[in-house]
Image 1 (cartoon, rainbow, N blue to C red):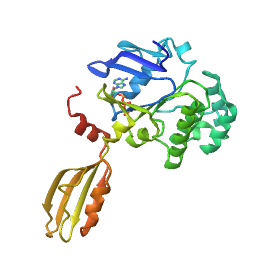
Image 2: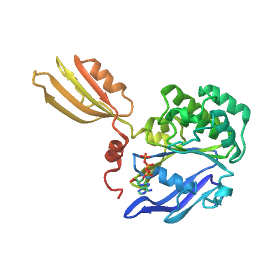
Image 3: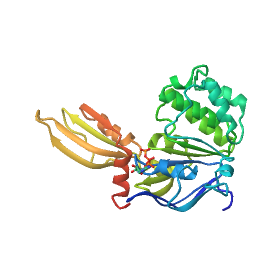
Image 4: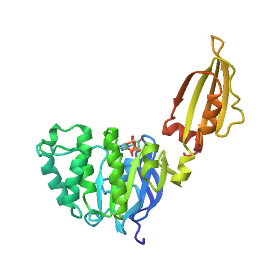
Length: 300
Ligand SMILES: Nc1ncnc2c1ncn2[C@@H]1O[C@H](COP(=O)(O)OP(=O)(O)OP(=O)(O)O)[C@@H](O)[C@H]1O
């Protein structure tokens, strides 16, 4: 198996008639930050649970640094993880929780843990039962980042974090990479994955549809723009990055243009700035819409 941090071979999970994860072949190299991107229900958590040995694959296998993931005791010597729904022992304080979590797995850098507690602004004196979802997530993140596990598995770890904490999270991921730790990060946020990952696996309806570099992923980014003009409309037809241009007239006689923007927006903005724009609406499509436009319906 070499020394890939994580490797799966035809990993499959069926729940009755539903194939949640379908013949997944995936390799995460030691030391890389790998994004596992997919819309809700794509199968990200199920994949992670199989890698953690919490769910038995219907078929196929997974390895953590060459150890079979089903051999939980040895695989968990090399990894730390943050689940999608963090549950903590309600009577233990944050400090007691971190102590307990630190005893599982490959050991803790206590000085770095203390630093992370400050950076994530955690009050460790309170019982975990009084923590919000975001605070529980922060405890689990601090516990995982403070280990020197060569593989960190993070399942949608920022869903409960505010933007300031999300920034701390991104810093902690970069620091982990700088120390040589591999990070397997599941997310349904294109922006998050773009910000911290080296490579990205794209999962849709249980199937891996692509493994892409961040540069390739950026090409997927699109913005929907709708603008209304009072005077003469701009000539957008020949502007680079504009697709699907539609023009209609509003009830008040003003012209409305709709289009999709990909790549750098500079040329489109220049063209718009020349016209008398009365209203503008800009929308980021959901991951599912982006995937549909790019990969079509042919993944099942
Ligand atoms: N224990 C289970 N029994 C039956 N179906 C399940 C079970 N666990 C997951 N599923 C189904 O498998 C599919 C994949 O779910 P999974 O939670 O892995 O997706 P996900 O990509 O992590 O989604 P999300 O981003 O919403 O967490 C979904 O259709 C889900 O309903």
